[in-house]
Amino acid sequence: MKIYKTQAEVDADLEDNKLIVKDNVTFLCDVVIAGDIKAHNIKAGNLDAYDIEYYCFCISYGNILCNSHHGLMDNHLQPQAINGKITIREE
Image 1 (cartoon, rainbow, N blue to C red):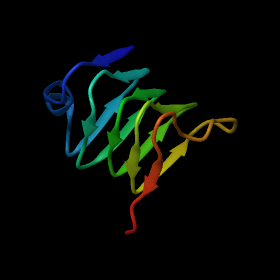
Image 2 (image 1 turned 90 degrees about the vertical axis):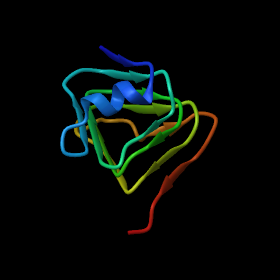
Image 3 (image 1 turned 60 degrees about the vertical axis):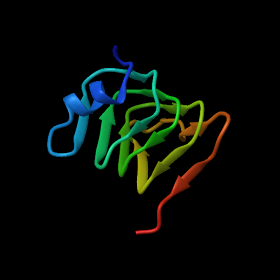
Image 4 (image 1 turned 60 degrees about the horizontal axis):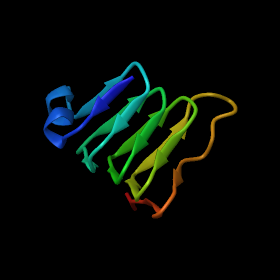
């Protein structure tokens, strides 16, 4: 499992505005990425990215803001914003 505690740690792992984590990822901070996120499963506070791709689940305790999101497994769960909402940007 990869755990990010700060936005600076997230920024350090970006390659071509993409964060690719070949494991589960937990963000202990609000995250803003001017690009895509791809990870096995995602847990976050507030999450702001262009496209979010995950295997089974993407859970936010705050809000999710993105252009698109999709799960890769046939039986994936839809993203959940526990105390917030999911907003899809108009392209």
